[in-house]
Image (cartoon, rainbow, N blue to C red; front, side, top):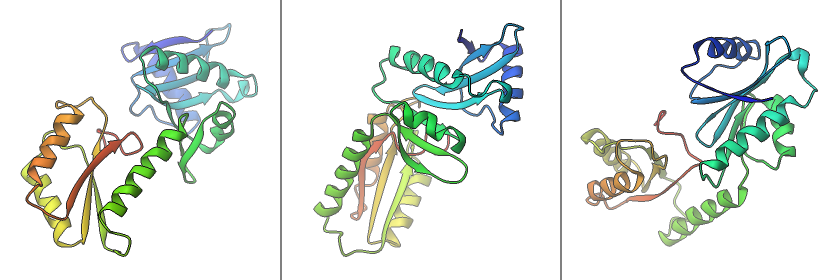
Length: 220
């Protein structure tokens, strides 16, 4: 049966790292794992999550085809929903694409190394419509020189202002898109308000609502 492993369980984490490495993965940005062991206490499957982001799905090659992936994913999805998230994301290798598609996830982006999925593609479509409406509202249909900055701004600094000003001087229009994860010192709403106030002197800069389809705070 699946069981939960947290960061402090050093022996289990060491075994998880080994299994991930055998499948070309690293345990990056995961705060909770779900694992399965065989009758000899050997780790044979793992999946991790970072809040509502599923990642690090890895099955021992000897046990692939035994439905372990579905068992792990179903377990961790239930865990995520108990924390009142209304959308789940997946970062995974191409070998796992079919598994997640069969579970109702839809792809937002992929390349040769990974794919990014959501189980609420309708939310993604709504965000695209929102951006399109802003584009039309600002009469940018004929402009080819539009820039975008993804910004965490925790807090907003002179460096952020310099970046916005530089982009403004080199573009017809600049979008600043806020990182929406609420795990920073300042809340999303506080950070967004800081950026709006600090850039109000730059006429061609527009701060738009953030989304969960952008880079996370750790990378911003």
